Length: 253
Image: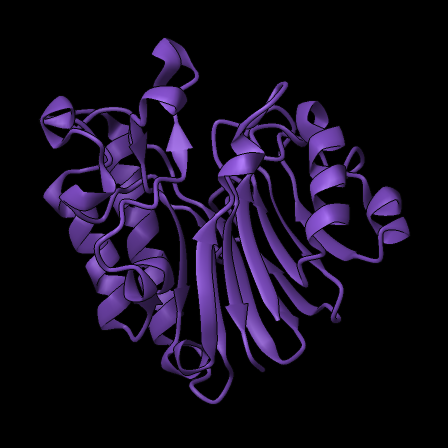
């Protein structure tokens, strides 16, 4: 089973590239973030032609998350079940695996109310993880907007006093790990940067100025069956790419 997570930074703008990537790579499950579409605009029909069932939680110009599956899709949930109006998390069951696609708030700045919202949002995600069914394989993938360690940032000094690298944010990722999840890419590649995001500006991609903020967090059952995890850097090249590259996990299920 191949599971991928990808912040596409507007499915409307990126659809031709996403479609071509799905045809070329044939992943079984894809967790999408930042669709920036309403449910009415989401390409359900086009995805069905490619062999994918899909579920979407849309918001129009902002946010938006989706799950695509070639191996069945059921038990869809949207949001945390509270009054948060932002479309940032969607869950589904695919071939017996419980999957969540999440787009964690950016945080903006350490003194911004959005940073508090980010930490509160991550705390709700940790509660969801803690309350999961331990008998069901489990994966949370998405754009976490947190570089878990200095290795995940091309120059930690450039981000001092900023979001994405602050200790409270990193503590929130550790809380997810304490709840029983493992950072798949880092578990399989303990010493490689494995960046997944590069700014559009200043030639950041070509200079290697990246961050690893797109994660696949899996439970011990899936980790035991993992055979590979990598970042598809090719998807960041060419015309009109997303600023994120897909992160892929492969499992022998």
